Amino acid sequence: MTPAADNGYRDRLRGATGTAHVRLDARFAHGLRTAQEYRTYLVGMQAFLANAERALSAANLGPTWRAWCDPVRTPWIDADLEALGLSPLEPGPALVVSSDAEAAGLMYVIEGSALGATQLVVHAQALGHTAGAGANFLHRHGGLGVGVRWRAFVRCLENAAFEASDESAMMIAAARTFASAEHEFHRAELSARPAC
Image 1: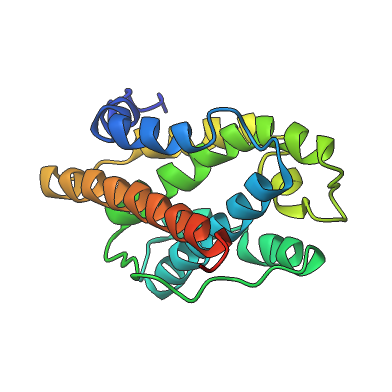
Image 2: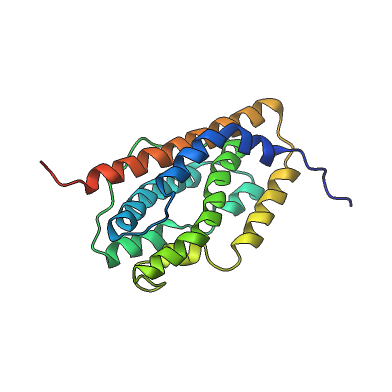
């Protein structure tokens, strides 16, 4: 059986979400250099992941995309919040996943974020956080094997055969997921500011 031809979903997702991706990356353009930046990152990422994973767990997905719901990452980052004495944000606007295509769009953002996490692990270590003490999430999310996982996800994506309407839904879901991440990091920044 010959492998499916590259259907271009990854490239089209990258094109459709490029501006949002740049905006999100700009929040951490210099990485996580201070304790406050790291705390803001953890609180925002926890709110985003909890929202995304609730949406995925409530969705009725086929076996291909259901398999990508594991691992569940929220417990990893919850442990970091607890280790650092941080409280999670109240849930923000809920993400909703109604199809495999929408799940693929959401997972594109989460799986892609693991690639960036490989650089943030080093920053967390420089701040004194290790896998067992405040950086459990980054060590597991962006740890060894992340490149292998990303390539496997891309193969799954490129082997999908979404209808045109599904492809559109996937692009919208990815854009909505980036917007959710931006929103949660913004809320985390606001929560870190001292009250006047």
